[in-house]
Length: 264
Image (cartoon, rainbow, N blue to C red):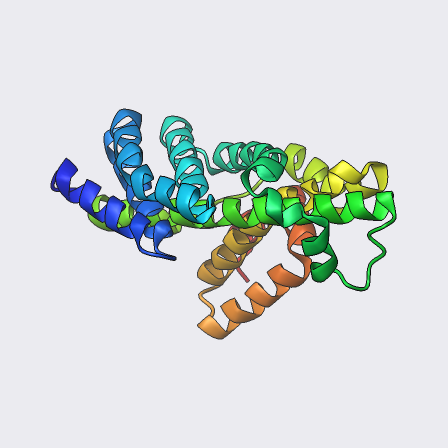
């Protein structure tokens, strides 16, 4: 936050070092949230230089993809001040990334690679091949989207530490998705593949905001009830087991509001 050169140094170095690109993305998020989209874009361009190296020389688009998604999400969060709108934007970006995957990493969809990933599946069957390929692209897109969302949360937390201590925690604990979001998301995540093979790849993408909302619910309930950290571990386990359905029930019943009304 001292200046452009300091921010650019952190973003460039983190983007250049293997497996530290998420710190670069979080740095972009912090600058975007605090100073606006123009400064964020400027910093992203600098951080993209080593990311382009990884893409061109190593064929790895991950740093560039995560940087780009994190920038867009930060711009949306700053402009709307809504985590719901930000997560929905992430879903749209994930769908686009799912569509772009054959271009970004075509070698991953090579029949020989697919046969190694799923040796027990009959990939000579066109329908089976289409379902597995779409599922693979969906998980690849979701993994990149999730890293970008976590980078967004880290950057938001940094901003909170600097300018509003405790603000991010309170903000995140209040996150709840409306039924207009959770109902279609659960339906697509659970049953989309039965309608069309292409929708198989959307299942993990639409599950992402549901799991984030489930984690927010876990932290919110533990905080409201003043429970120990052991309960948080149990809540996390519940989220990972039935996260989408938990987010759906919370959107319909608003557990945190009920706890506030009847704390006993």
